[in-house]
Length: 123
Image 1 (spheres, rainbow, N blue to C red):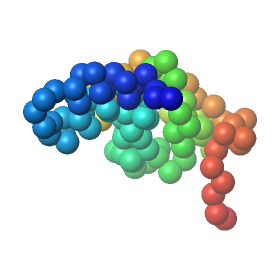
Image 2: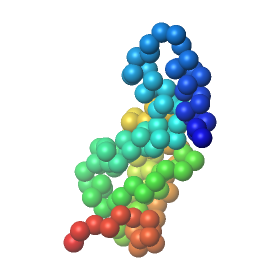
Image 3: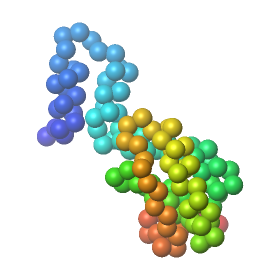
Image 4: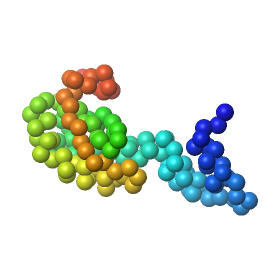
């Protein structure tokens, strides 16, 4: 049983008589599949220090993106307060790394409230 994304890819790219460039196929997969969306969002984690800034980044962890909202877990209410003043900067910087679904909001939560969602870190 094929996924709808694979079916669409076969119809649009692979059904041509001529060979297709692999980079074109990968671009189409990135643009039309959930995996592509997740790869796009991964840019936030990869460039987190540049997005949040070197002062703020060590005190927060991006948790996920849903419906254009970036969820960030913070160490303490002090850092949550500092981040709250920089939300628009964070959105603008993150959107520089995204080509598809852009962020429109940042949702701040304390790490202790999101412990079930965060990866474990070594002491």
